[in-house]
Length: 189
Image (cartoon, rainbow, N blue to C red; front, side, top):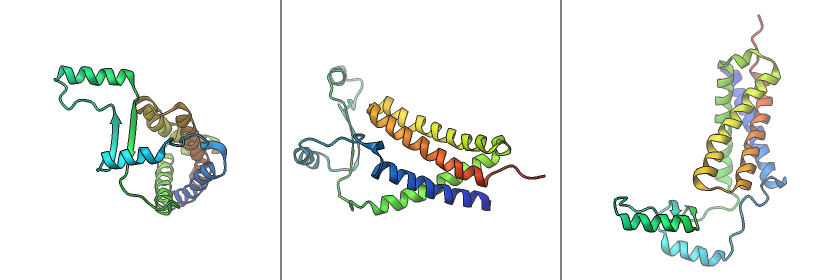
């Protein structure tokens, strides 16, 4: 258990450093989130239209799917576009994002401990260092497919955004794998 905790803590630190570098210093996320034109006008419309935090989609599906006229209107609007998903928070926050950074760091440590535990329970734990690194890297590929590729498909996330986020996640977990594999290794006879 001690190895899993140490592997998770160390890999969580490394993954967090990678993510910080990918967002702050490398051109990885350049243009993944576009500048909103007419920001003040859009902010005013949102503030005056939406009062509850949440995820919103446009066009809105009818509440009563048995209302043929409403369904037809929605289908026409969906075909014509635009389509949008809005993740909305009514209040502001600290632009330094200190709490998100701390929570993100804790999430990475927990996730890395989980990856170390999975590796320790797999047959890959008895294999070479590269095999163990690959095992954790594949967990990153799996995570990127079930999250970012799913969002690309269902929520129309842009391909450029999806590719950058997938690459960031996979590279981070390969880095994590380099560390986790050093802790979780075959038992000596």
